Length: 117
Length: 109
Image (cartoon, rainbow over all chains, first blue to last red; front, side):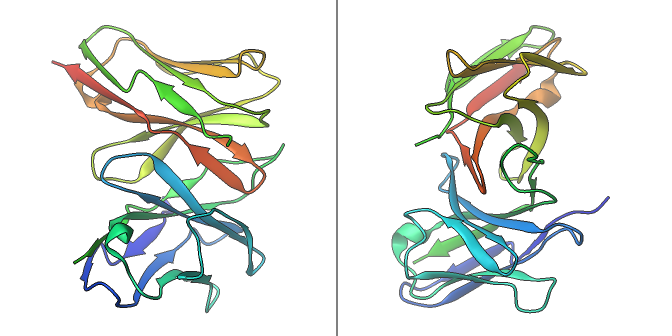
């Protein structure tokens, strides 16, 4: 069964360092998302990506964050200068369809746990 | 915000009992989805109900949607210990899907 894969599963970094989290979405999906979840709390929307550009982003997704689909299979989230409060589980998701009347389900990866010291 | 909010925050029941979780949201939606998350894992889609539907079934799951009250409920019948997880509702606003804080369900064997 196709699945979304994320690497690394856990990353520990020092405050101020850059971090790149990687995701391989399901191959025929067109919509890609990043979410984060702080220690079992709510799942917060960060950004959605379609047709090689950001389609929606939240207030959390400030200038420290960026996303890229560099090679047609990977989908990355970069945090330029990490802060303590960036410590969270980051989930990548993909969907064959976006939101709206023809929305489809989101398929989530298992997450990348980021710990900022 | 369109975020769904689940209620109760936590629910503990005995195996075999039914579990009901509720979700409320703030603005109009195209559809509402329910997801499950085992501890430390990714979210898994359970069921989607469209705004023009009132009830939907899938196995032991029953979802209702009341757009006039902006609320949905998820019923799990004949619960099993393996149903222990967090359950989230998600509402969509085009290419943003909003999740709530979830209901932590504990099913005791």
